[in-house]
Image 1 (tube, rainbow over the protein chains, first blue to last red):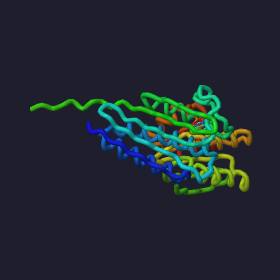
Image 2 (tube, rainbow over the protein chains, first blue to last red):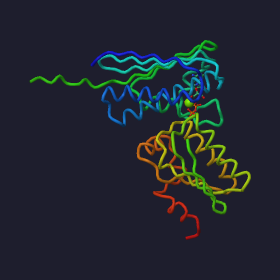
Image 3 (cartoon, chains in turn brown, red):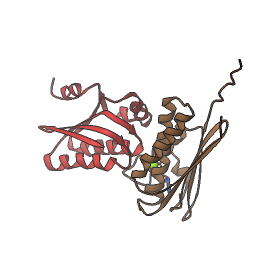
Image 4 (cartoon, rainbow over the protein chains, first blue to last red):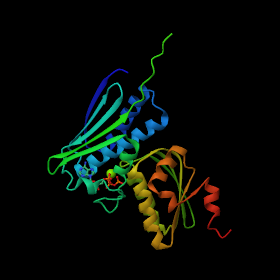
Length: 145
Length: 114
Ligand SMILES: Nc1ncnc2c1ncn2[C@@H]1O[C@H](COP(=O)(O)OP(=O)(O)OP(=O)(O)O)[C@@H](O)[C@H]1O
Ligand SMILES: [Mg+2]
C-alpha cells in the first residue's frame, strides 16, 4: 500500500466539521475500506474535530484546528489538534457519559474508542489538546500469477 | 439540513434531511423547542429516513428534547431509521429510552388510544 500524507488546517467553525468528514471518507474509499468502516471513521473524526471547536475553543470561530492524516503500509493515523484550553483530567474526560457540558452526553470519546483501534489523548492546560487515532489496515495479499 | 414540518393537534412531525452534527443540531433543537413553547406540542415524531450522518451532537439534541418533553407528559418517537444510523444510536443506548417505529403511521397509531 502506498504511503500518503494529508494535512488540513481550518478555522474553528461548525461548517468545517462536515468537510473533515468528506476528507476522511475519500481517503477511506481510496483505501478500499468497507462502507461500514468509512462510516465509523467519519464519526470518529467528527467527534474529535467537534470537541476541538466546542470544548478546546469554546465555540470561538477565530481559531485554527489541525487535521493530519498519515497512511503507512498497515495503518491510518488521524491526528486532530487544537491550541485551546486543554483538558484538566484526561482520564475523567474519557469516561463514558462524562461531560463538562450538562447539555451533552459525553459520548464523543466513547465513539472514538469503539471505532478506532488505538486512541491517545495528550493535553496541556492553556496549551491545547492532541487526539491521535489509529486504524489498522488489513494488508492486501500480493497476487502472484 | 432541510426540515419538513407537519403539525396535527399536539403532535409535531419533523422530517430531517441531511447530516445531524454540531452544525445542524441547533436547527433541529430550535425547530422543536419553538413548537413545544408556542403551541404546546407534546409528541414529537422524528422521521430520520433522509439522515445520512449522525454523531454525538446529533444524538444529544434528540435526548435533550426527550428530557424536555418528559416532565411535560410528552414523548418523542423516531421512525424510518437507516441501518447505519441505527447502529450508532444503539451504541449510545438511545433505543433503551426512546421508541422506534418502522414508519410514521405506526408512530401516530401508538398512543392514540388504539
Ligand atoms: N479538545 C478538547 N479540549 C478541551 N476539552 C475537551 C476536548 N475534548 C474533550 N474535552 C473534554 O472532555 C469531555 C468529554 O468529551 P466527549 O466528547 O466524550 O463528550 P462531550 O463532548 O462532552 O459530549 P458529546 O461528545 O456526547 O457531545 C468534554 O465534556 C470536555 O470537557
Ligand atoms: Mg464530544
